[in-house]
Image 1: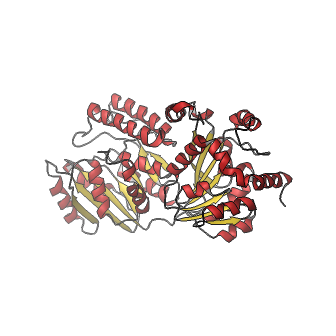
Image 2 (image 1 turned 30 degrees about the vertical axis):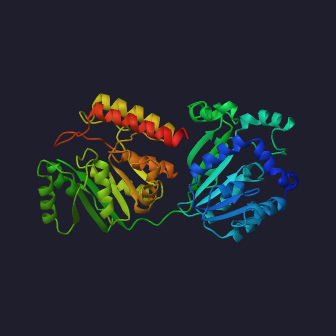
Image 3 (image 1 turned 45 degrees about the vertical axis):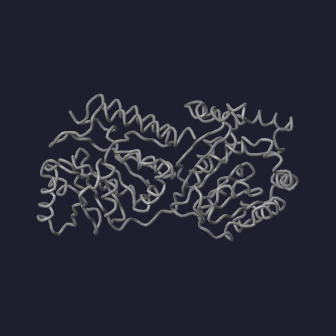
Length: 475
């Protein structure tokens, strides 16, 4: 049964349906900023379900390949159908399970923009969304910061904001908590718009560079929470490709092959040789001859840099699961099954090693490198909205499908990363993928010398930080 409160909300929505654009025009900058960030989270061409769609403005702005909107206001649905005949709009209460069952799906993105304010049972409604999800589906909830309640109340009194009736006031932490109770895995929690007015041109700069600072974001008007279903899990990968970039690592080739555990019935090792000045290539050919029962490939790197080597290896890898293992073996190959299990169990979509959780082996990493890595990890955790303790651990694991999504969105950042680590990390963050770290014991080299320069590569790391800030934070 529909509550009295919801009947009041629906009656007011019917009353205001024809005036909606006037209110949007009155607060155009706020809606532009909200739409800008939503488009960042939701790229065009997705299958989108908008629950509580109003007149369909936001759904149309996202340029979906398939767009379905649901609203419980007959007047709003009629307005949406009139404005956007290319999209599908349905009349119904999203808290009615039969309404969701009739929609079909699945969808790439399910949006609830301000909708949770009118729900009677937020947890139950969110729990009912799993049937519309695949493992790749993302739920996006946007809502007002409860700290702004007095300001918004004044705005309604002065006629600056559209009238409203009793709403749920949920903080972003409340929303994230309820999502977890409903068996969703929270991927991103963010806030935007410290200044929802143009303010003679200063509003945009304040929202980009001030509202995103640590501490300031908690004061911003708009909260965004992105989550994925913890119920819908993909089937475990059937095969594994271990990609090993190798340059001047002849003394580690046999050890790498002999120490990599068997994780799948169908498993291959792909060495990508990077113009070595020692006998690395010859050693790879010898190990191929010695272990004919193992599927070992040798790829000659076409360009330079680890990023180029990883991409070359991924291009020929046939496994469902792609693993990167550094040929220096400072991250033990024996730890790879932990990464395999994290992917198969659905705990993460990009699984990375972290060398900075356990104590480091003596001489494994110089003190200045350790301090720099920890500093950059703090910065990246802030910018990516996920916990990152080690950005440069070479061991990273993801599925072919995940890599394809990252590769498809690479043009957003450009070709900026000679390491390859940040290409994957930034791409995963942009795609709202779940990043999980596996603590590993970082060992000192037993052969060769490090190819990392503290100062030259430190400057490159600083440049990477700037790229991440501009493209992922200061939007």
